[in-house]
Structures are given as C-alpha cells and as structure tokens.
Length: 257
Image (cartoon, rainbow, N blue to C red):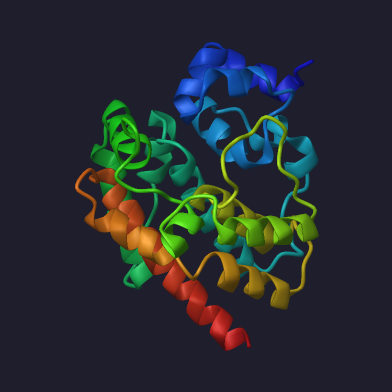
C-alpha cells in the first residue's frame, strides 16, 4: 500500500507514468514503490512541488534549527540544490526560485549570479531536453555522473562497493526495487546535505572522510565536464556552481584538519 506522500506526488505529477517520466526512471520502478526512496526524495519534490517533509517525514521531519551552525546550514542548502539539479531537470517552479538567487563578489557569489541569470531565461521544456541529452540519452548521455565511471572508466566497480560499505555504517540501506547505483552524483550530494545539516549524526572527521573518499576524488571533474559539455546550456552554469562549491569545501576540510 502506498503511503500518503507518494500518493500525493503521483497525483501532482498526473499519474505513475508521468512521475516516472519527470524524474527520468522506468514506470515499473515507481509502480513498485510503497514510499518514495530516500535517494529520490529531492527529485520528486522538484518535479511535483510536494514537500520532502510530506514525502518522507521519517527523514525530513526534523528542521535544522538553531543547533546547526549557519555555515553548515548554508552548505546543506548548496548540496541540496546540486542534488536536485543532478537528479532531474528543474521544473518551471524551481527555475523561478533559482532565478531569485543573489550573488556577490566572491567566486561562489558570482556562480550563484550566473546560475540565476541562466534560470531567468531558461524554458523548462528545453532544460528537460538538455538534461536528457546530458545524462540519459539514447543509449547513454554525454556525461555519466557516477563515481565508478570517473574513477575506473566503468560502471558498478570497486568505488561503488566501497561506498555501499560506508553507507551501511551510516545506516543507509538500498531501497528494494531501486536499480540506480548509489554512486550517482545526486545521491552523494544528498548525503552530504544530510551530513552538513546534522540529519545523519557523524563526527566532523567522519564527514570529512566521506567527502574525501567519495566526493572530492571525482565530482569536481564531472562539474568541469559539465561546463564544457556540448549539450550544456543551462547546465553549464550548474557545472560552474558545483566546481566552485567543491573547491571551497575541499579547502575548508583541509583547514579543519
């Protein structure tokens, strides 16, 4: 039996087939869900407008609150935005929200301003096609956003196995009937958002170790490739934001040693 959040998302999307299409997966996968898998929450929220707190209250019922450092809260929002954009093409509503981002003279501020400018002139249907060409394609997209591919040249290799071991230590289990490898960049950004926000309780050293082992070794190259991709227009600015943000993260974790 489907839970309330999943039913609401299906209704908002216009049916199971439409929800599957909008988040870029096969209809039978969604048909087999009893609730939205953890790694799909941000994507489903983006295309349906249904709050993640309703989709998965067990994961998102606790706000960050005053206990979370403002810098960590900002980091969590940055990772969540990247996860959203990596998991699926942004809806018109999300593009409108992104267009309101404010920039400043810092590298990250300039990246925000460029992304806002790109979102302000983007057409959702065109960005959806761009996303398909970049990450899905007929056979495969121009880019493969997986750690195993960037680190070994093949999918489902040793980096994925090592990640699964570490996810088990964090208490994150693979959802039944979900066939998407966990080393997708969107999944890893979502996990980093949860670490930064304190929704996954680990020490600062453990958070840094996860970043260095599963994110910094390869994801910066993905964002650089996104900036240069032939199919990228809106996503070129996403690549710039991701690259700049990860450079800041890497430097900050170095200082934290």
